[in-house]
Length: 197
Image 1 (cartoon, rainbow, N blue to C red):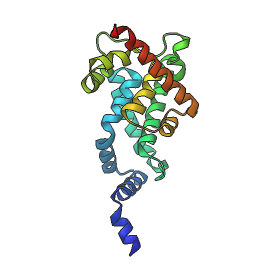
Image 2: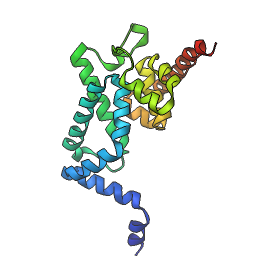
Image 3: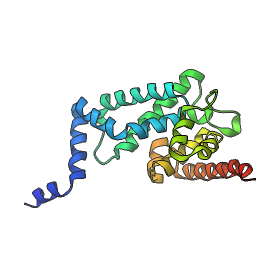
Image 4: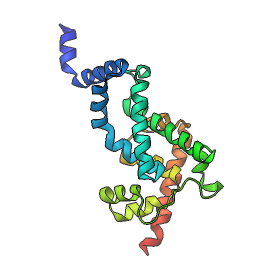
């Protein structure tokens, strides 16, 4: 009887169990449900990394194909969004390496030069998304800071992920995530400074 009460008492666990079973079977209907739940967050994250809507959309599609292909590897103790964002991030890194022969961290290293800053005339897709959600000023500020800082700021403050999840997604030590958050906030503060005058 306790098992029945527990089963009916926790619909989140029921849904999670359904997703795990569906992913392990390679069920495309489960994939449709997951896309419905996570599509906006994933696309926003990819736009923040790439700055290019076509590239973000391509990697978005590839991410879901990988989820379907590797669904048997997913474990119920993992948070799905962390697993999903990790897959997406690795695909962005692979794409960056293919195009430029460098890692995403090297491309986004603000001390080493320009870094991975997409060339765009006018507003980038990321800037358009941010403008629609947070206002024009935030969009301008975020577009001016290095992508490595923008990534952790989006994950922490927009997606409200805990630091441990960000560590799992970008696969760096906690101290690095904290440092990037601090430097990102400092970059935002400095960028906003001249506009306040």
